[in-house]
Image 1 (cartoon, chains in turn orange, purple):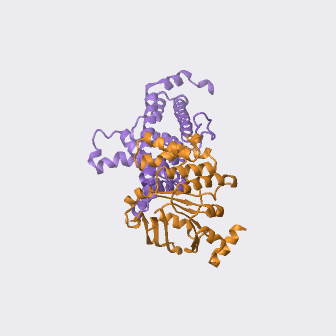
Image 2 (spheres, chains in turn red, green):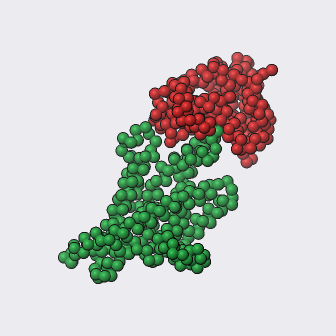
Image 3 (cartoon, rainbow over the protein chains, first blue to last red):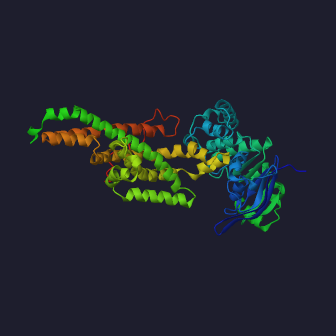
Length: 246
Length: 248
């Protein structure tokens, strides 16, 4: 039996008149990497935010390690959110904190670790993303790629059960994309469970266990990368791939 | 005409006890009223941004009430009417200073709440999102992330409010508070000279505001988030300069 870490069941989400998710079911097993692609407005980011329980779905359920998150009250949810790491397109590092303080913050505030322990762990994870020497720099003083690696360290230090990446490289200058993808690739090799919204098709090809195509609030197709890229079944996927690859 | 300037009277006024005490009273009143106003204004601002309709309406009514009525009227009301309404304010503890403190705090809080609200809104919503994703509670996010970032935006207009408030304290002479302008007026009345006593009072106001501007530029540097911030010169000129001129 597969070991499911994160599961969504029939998610619906609407903003006013706009129905963004129209019944999305989805699961990711421990150690799997799922890459989600699709045109903008297809509901990819909303799906991630529902999985992270940053946006409660209007209908449907989210399970983390078979615990039903959608049944929990807001207070209990905070603790569970810390078990799923989230990386944003715009990094969203805390501007008023140094890189080290950003990474320590969750351990001190949420996990209530003593400062000394938190600092040691944060230093270790900054080193892990290759930024040990930038510990005392503030976000404004770091490049986009460095900021995103700090953001990854900030999520990783919480030892999450899964990591969610929302277009982690699309706000980066081309020459900075590689350093972020390298970190993500090594994470995948270490067996981290990941859901990645990204249009980095080569990354998807190399790293993904399976690739999903989303369009208009639905998952259109899901397949292992070889199959997905060489012989997509759906017309919608073929059209999208031809647009992205050209 | 300048020949009639009495240098001796000017220096006497400048160094006299009533002036010194008056200036101290004005400064004290400004500091405590502004501090109180920041605390009240913070909660009014949070109410104004709340998801609950009742809180939002409450904040709106508060700001409407205190901004639409003259400060002078509020001072009179607190000093004369409040003890009649509520006997708890008839005691000897209710000095002119206490009355002015209460009136100016509640008045100023209405203005501060708008400044603080703008400061809170200026913080990128992505900051709160990241905090929630980490599992922080709203209170933690507010305290550790949003408020420190809002402070930077809030400092320059708060400098303006300090100056406005300092000048408003001179209104408190109507409820017989012995502040700086009172000292000037009493000396004028006693000597029938106006230039020297009023000029001496003016000097005190200038000195107080200059000190404030120094403190403000220090604070602004303190809330600039770069690793070398203590060595760097502030990029922006001190923000208060001469902009505080609203006649409340």
